[in-house]
Image (tube, rainbow, N blue to C red):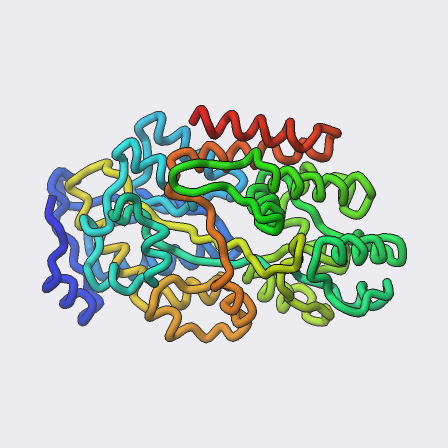
Length: 407
């Protein structure tokens, strides 16, 4: 295949006309079809990708990008099935990628992207997208988690200040549950993103998921955090179906005043403005066991599978096109996330991201470069909810650890 040269990339940036080649073994008329599977963040995601695709296709006659959207609840199962059936998309938007690198299924950044695009990624996100010094993930968006607090409900319950420790959060949840018609805390342990909710509590106890070399789920710190989550549920301080609750509908209910507190991410700010602009709320640091500041940082990625070497130039041109500031900033600002490119950080107009940007220095990330992380994440999503069925925390975490060890 041909790598994109620096000179060609500069021309592409200057003209915004990323002209594709004939595609080699494409159709007889020289046309090329790319397939893209993307996770949906909001009702805007599909339209945003369609806009990027349309402008790319206009600049590249003969190239078509076929887009398929999937929910976060389903996309991991969908891509596993596609890969097993040798039907992986040319471009994938998801979170974890290390397992595909281990199987030599992905292009590296230097094989596809212009040097200008590579250099534009924030260094920390580029490092988080690399394995053994080679970048395989193309950072897409970033987010940090914070505690969203319904100030009106806490005031009604006599809670004067947002909690900073677990003990204070539990007391506030008790007060809201007993004094209002709302649940004290929204606990989403359903399959949509249970690994994030649990991970926040793990970090708050000094635990976590491990690193690129070793996954650590069943640890004393994580057991303590799991026991605290279970205690909130067992004592009626959360919604009764916490084990099956998905993050998105729970946060919708927070916006409507059904919860005193819930862990949230940047796009919730825009959702509140749209759905309940009169909501009296605050965004504060995540309460931890001892009050030390920590947050879960999440970076999702684009990646490209080695399906057809003759499509590599078209894939690279599409990705370069997407990361141009005029395209990328519209995408990230509309979705309400944090930009992962230097130019995006300079040009974003979303002032509501300030509290989350302030938390990034204390962010801990998933061990996404560990090949066992995808299996661990799936096990967390399917099993951590067992905490609400009477299963002991140590038993739940031991089961997840066993799957990680066998990945």
